[in-house]
Each structure stands twice: as C-alpha cells, then as structure tokens.
Length: 181
Image (tube, rainbow, N blue to C red; front, side, top):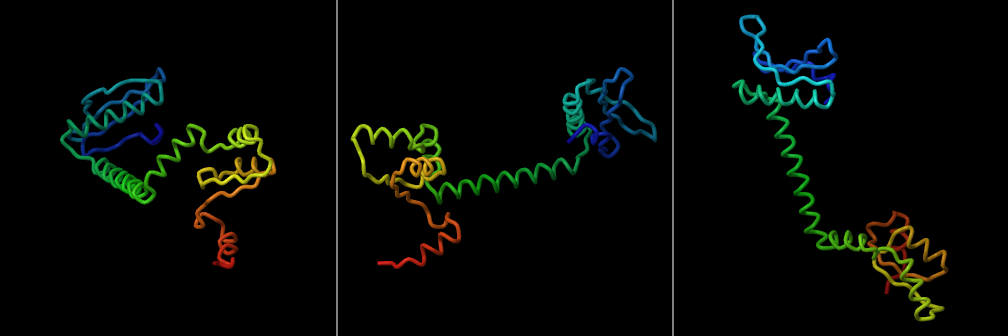
C-alpha cells in the first residue's frame, strides 16, 4: 500500500491522519472527533522517508486499534484471509510431500551437490575406463536440457527414465501407439 493511498483511515470517531509539514516532512497523528471538533490524541511520528511514513501510519492504526476501544473490521477480515491462504498453502505442500515422498527433498539435495549434472561424470568414465561404446542410463533427476544436449553433442547413447504424465501430448500418443509385449 503506497503512501498516496494512506490519506485517512477512519475508525468510528478516532482515525489516523497524515499531515504534510512546511519542511516537507509528514506527521502521523491520531485524531478524535468530539462534538464536530478535531482533537489531537497522539503524535505517532514525523519523517520525510516514504517507508518510514508508511511504517508510522501502520503504528497509528495499531494505536487506534489497541487503545481506541474500537475495532477495524478490515483488519480482522485481512487477518482471516491471510490465515486461510496460509493454511491452504501449507496443507497443499503437506499433501504434495505425502504424495511424492522424499523425492522432493532428495532432488533439492542432488541439485545442490551437483548430482544432476552429468558432464564431468561421463567424461571421467570415458577416460578412466577407456570406453568407446556405452549407454548412459539415468533416472528422471538427470533429465534436463543441458544434460541431454551434452549427451547428444558428445554422440553418447542414453536412456533416461521419465514419467509419461510429464511428457507432451504428442509423446504420450507415440508411446501409447507402440506395440506392447
């Protein structure tokens, strides 16, 4: 929420007010309307920094909420929406972990330690064991464009396991059209 949209927020009779000063700074004050007249309750702070003004404005809102004896229905609604969003987010992630098991964790570890990069491994095997004709067999954790490009550019044969559900429609149709034994 930008400072420009934070002009006044009403809380029944008490509200937070942003006042531009001659010096260019902005004062954040809590004001109360009494018999049609404005009564200054508390100065929250003064600043020229836009972020600090926004922070002070929110402090003023908290002051009114906590000490004004009035409730802001939008504060509670916002908290409820945030709680529902977070609960749904965490539950979907828990469900994802239960469905995919440790693979989610292991894939991240493999990537960090370089197990998803086959370029040094293939060349090391070729040189160490003097290989001329071989086939690289790997699981879907090694299935990425850079690894496949590396294997193809080196003229290496390969088999990489992958889930059919992750393939394009065209590849799925081709797989289904193959004769099965």
